[in-house]
Image 1: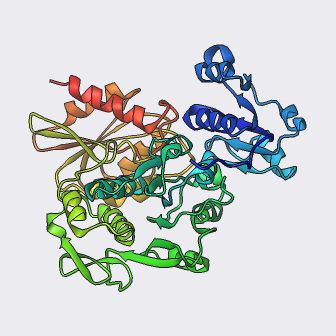
Image 2: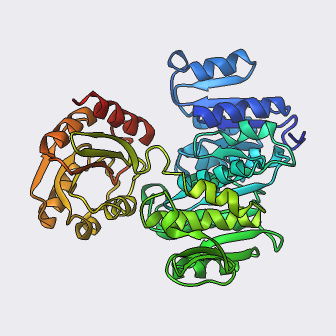
Length: 450
């Protein structure tokens, strides 16, 4: 860990807790900052805030008082989920107070270079593949970021020999200043999170922050099958490394004659890849590009790709019961991810879907509903999904109140040979704290069936 003086003797406000806020507050305290923590949850219900108070950190809980901006803070480190419309955040920007996320702190103290992965879909699978390929090659690597490992905590143990492999959301990337990954990946770019960003242009701009500080010494791996993304990344100063599932590319990764190739070198046969689904080829090609640039051997890549079958909550096989196979795709928080999941199966599907209503419709799912024999809905979007399913000609639609009931109904509607798929096409926050919690409840409910 680098000992930096950027925050020494400076007043810093940590806005919002959760895991990243706690880590940021403790790190800033260690770096000599005068830290104040502000969290919406009352202190009596907030064990994380109580812990920070015991460490000698000033804590203000129960609301976000605008008067805090009068205390002379020189920086704010905010939880990524807090929108920029929050009065404290917008007020800080007006006062030209830097508003950062803890990813920036992680970068500033890390001795190890970063491989940063962002995009609308496929981030977690790509991040995990890269990490597993480093491990298979006995190369030191650290997993961090939006994948569940708080970056500013885990990089404190990083050395110059490590690689920090970090998944990054658009929310996190809006709060960077000097963050510069040696290798950056944009898996794909679709319209998403408009409730947070407001416009697709603002969302794309946030994603492109991953390359804003890169130089000619760095690499930007991009999806060459998306012309709009290629146009957006033309201004990057990094070396562009394309990948494509549809055409040959000379300076990147692609599929040629049934072979997975990087810069015209054959790595392995596509038919030997264990990870199912055409959409996962994008993730695989971007991951291979990153590790080849970092010097990982073909043998290590082959070992991972012939054994790696997926990440929890991403089209995760749960169990087979009386000829029905259950899959947990709780990470499918938008229609694009659900379309990919539906396209991955040739069997009849019982689909479980629903969640937070972000104002979007679901008609783009209709062409993918041909094999869906029944839809079980839940959450705020149950009505919208029901209307979509009726237009798609789905034979049976059942509305439920919660996940346990949804699993029971899906099993009742199924027959031997069917796939029962949780792929919500929505965020989880109307009923569950995270998509992981939603997926875990699905898994638990599936295992109670007999």
